[in-house]
Image 1 (cartoon, rainbow, N blue to C red):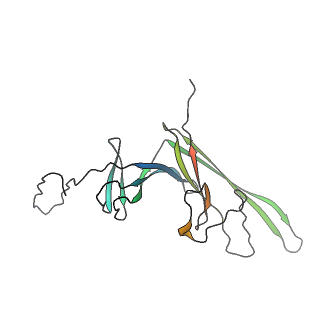
Image 2 (cartoon, one colour):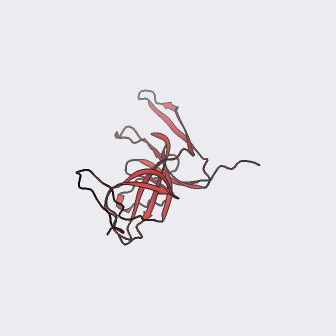
Image 3 (cartoon, rainbow, N blue to C red):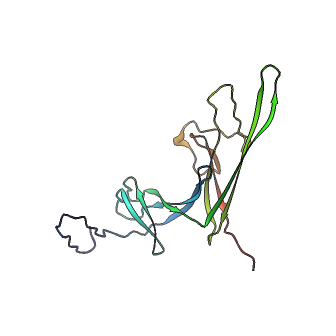
Length: 194
């Protein structure tokens, strides 16, 4: 139901009419996959506290009265149902990524075996005004050959879940079925001296 009368001209063109404005509680977190790109993407996990279903489609996102992004809802969200959207990148979160690939040792006389150590370092600097939650993804190498063994040194003993539906997304560190190490951390805001 539209809260007030609206006249739509029958001119064959599209017209927009405000049906409702919803204010929803949200938990915000940033996602970064530095091996792919250094941008931090802000996401919002929300609960539809209204008595209206939210239809799928494009939407304009406002925070504290300011337009911040265009996003999309992919499926209908029923009342009391949770959903998430991405709100774009945030230039206040800076990521530095370094990768090192070094030969560790070679052994064997007739059949040579080699060992390589791959390491990466991710530095996240939070230049925003508040502490933020970060979800970081780093791809772990995976072998399709029985002659090539990949061992994850840090964190040790991390195995992919057998059933993705039972994965605990709130776990501090986990290995996803696509072989990404995923961990949650908090980036404290950068403070300057006085």
